[in-house]
Length: 351
Image 1 (cartoon, rainbow, N blue to C red):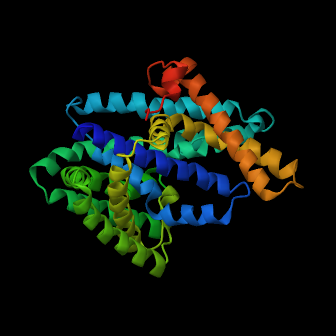
Image 2 (cartoon, rainbow, N blue to C red):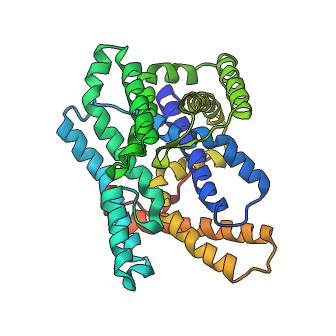
Image 3 (cartoon, rainbow, N blue to C red):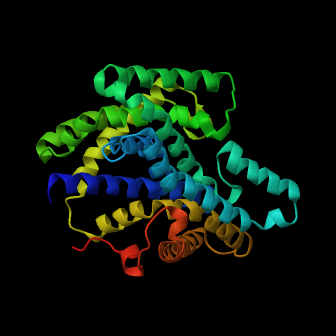
């Protein structure tokens, strides 16, 4: 495996793992979940969503899209189109809109003004937010290439702006408050691209040194501070702890994933597949969980919680496999993607 392949693989593995935690987070807020899974979820929470913006910055490139217009067209096809298409689909699948006109207007406002998608596909807020993060950042990129100091300066400006928006309870349309608070992670990804790729390609004994330092720092801060922050809705209480802890977590976990990806096992392939189909899973799992919550919490109350968890989890996996297959084969144009066969949709790397 050459360096370029390794880079792509570990990023996909990291995305796949963190995205699994995103689904788990939505799962544990609606259905019975074992306590140890909740603790694992909480441990990764400080950098779970920031890592996505960081990795998007890490992969940012103007090599193929040299003008702003071309960049907007590309991101509109791969991010804006899926956001609108999937939001409308799940709006139409929401039975409430057919009996309550105010609810329909409420959901339309969520999609096109608030930028947080329809109620039954709320996780799509990330897609719309990433779209604006990319578009806001692009015009600044040339300055960062010319003047290295510009990156930390720009990140600081966005952190300060996010702080002012949050403290003054300013509500911006298109979820721009969240985009502004997420921007520093995207900028850090762009600025640290060379350093991260160098560290992640180090041999294990060198890499473990960096990983240990950042992991120890993460552990100390995590267990001694009240994190009190989340990107969605720009709900951040301690800005210094939030950004610093998130970056520590992103770095040590990046190092870990770059080693983990060297293992020849099916788990790697599964995580890569989850990353490739993240958009589909992101748009559909919320709706599936709403149905599961109704069924398991209201119709099978007498069943043991662990049985409910296992049953609901298996049902979710099967449902997502079907969604991935059908979306890639029949509704790929909604996703801004090419058509894929069933085999291509579910492929994982072989041992």
